[in-house]
Length: 249
Ligand SMILES: C[S@@+](CC[C@H](N)C(=O)[O-])C[C@H]1O[C@@H](n2cnc3c(N)ncnc32)[C@H](O)[C@@H]1O
Image (cartoon, rainbow, N blue to C red; front, side, top):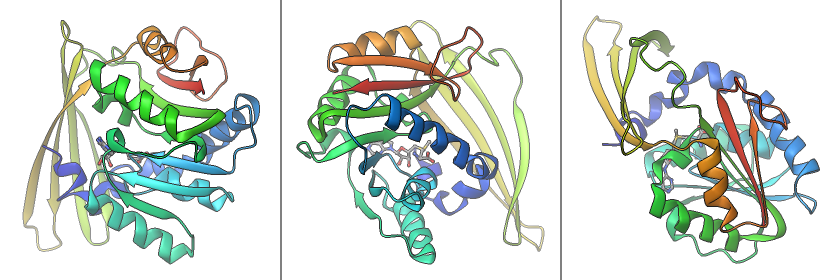
């Protein structure tokens, strides 16, 4: 089910190389939200579902005191090694975001790159509860998720990347179960070794689709102030393709 985060964890940064190269722009926006929306000075950040730490490390580079938590040890071991190589002091914890038991310890909680789509209608309520408890009053929760019908009906997307001496060919497509708002995200990853031999992996993930309005209505049950922004601006425009939930405890 989660091959991308287990057997393929060491390839995650290569697969998402282009996004990783732009992480500075994402974190510029997140810092603007910290300054303008949080009602306290943000210093301590909990990055939930931190994966290989692409955003986690960037936050630490900018001087935040960061804790990263992820379900998969394989992702965390990549993140730990990268942090060690850069001499960054980040606490990485293995665990389920639904089972965290922090009490008013963080100024901000983040959940990047559509990770919030792993939580269905009932789980997301538990997630909001745990995040709210982990935040200090006035602290901010930030999570991004995509516009699900953008690209709907388009054929598979194919691209290639490199990792050391291996070539990766990645083929993505998706199927939408409209009635239950489930997105079946499918991916074929072919890893070609220098001797020409090929290993292939199929990823088949079920994600939960949320519209910006649904996300706002759900979050409003738990947080004092909720805003939805689009792309990397503190406003929402009709053609935005990625949304940012910003919720204040
Ligand atoms: C798309 S990746 C995003 C990783 C990282 N946030 C980033 O921006 O690159 C989704 C991550 O969510 C993690 N994940 C999924 N369900 C989780 C849960 N219940 N608790 C903690 N992490 C979870 C996966 O292990 C994976 O690392």
